[in-house]
Image (tube, rainbow, N blue to C red; front, side, top):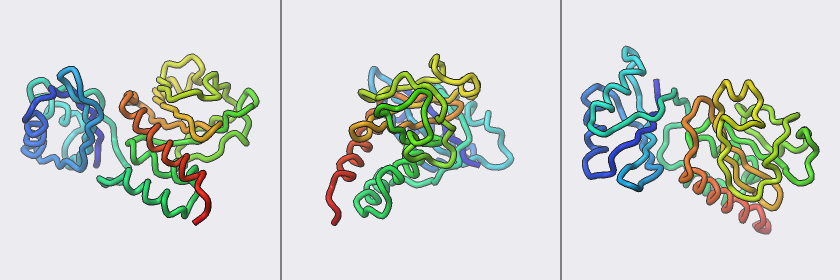
Length: 224
């Protein structure tokens, strides 16, 4: 089974190599690695690993934290496509125009960001609570936003929507649903979420804003 480890590691040569060696020695394969942030002497990395069936998930924490200075911020099962060219695939699909940008973003962004779901909402003059027609597109796992009052719509800029927000339904808070949102076009918002953490970081928010900006440009291009 695959798991997503979010690691906070000292930003110095050899640390990631030591983590990889520790995992390999324990018979655990690294499938992919994304460096999310670097600064102030630390780095934050997302590592997807394949855990042998006879090993407990907690053993991952024991193995990596045996490397000096390494901390596990979160550990959760990972069932997404295991590839290393997620953003390039999305940009290529956008350029081909086989589906609308909204359809592509909700389908592909979850795997780009190792998240659970994506939804696009129309924030222009929306009724409160949110009406069904305000949900422009959504991935299969997206929760129901219809009927919610969203004080952050219309969205003026990228923002993190942590799981302790007062507007969140009690059930969502119990599930620790972490979200981030960025504007899409003139009135829409792309919302990305995952249950149980880890919380989204500023670097992920900036990446999402960048990719959504490209999709906005593609959506405005004339037909080929």
